[in-house]
Image 1 (cartoon, rainbow, N blue to C red):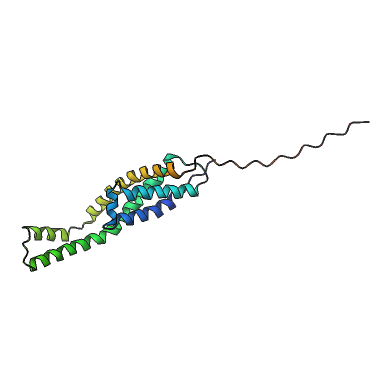
Image 2: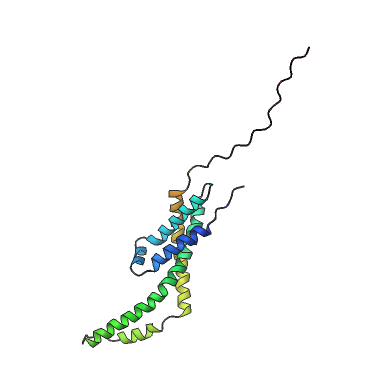
Length: 177
């Protein structure tokens, strides 16, 4: 009977790292390059899975660990970027206020937009965004996991342990008188 690989530990470790990288303001832009952090995180999870599993891995194993990595990354990304969004809105308001003090002409309606977006956080929109991100990250992560298994998994089955030899045959009987 074959042993099932443990998917959760590699998915949690790689997913948290990929989610943090995705949620940071400038570093997260790496996801604009072919979903770099999600595919890379899923491939790393597949490498960790291959290192921890003595049997051959299939592409489906990579897809499962990659999808789990994507889901963990989506949750981590949402939690990391949530306080940063509020900070960015406050920063934008301060910059526009300073520009108005210095005599700059602000576009019409910009204050209305800032006032509307200041209280725009709603649990419903947050959960909807998290659900969409989790779906997209899971699909892309599955692709990264398949790539990771094809790159890092063992290519041949390790030899099975040899069965212990059976009892030795008794020596032939001596010829009779």
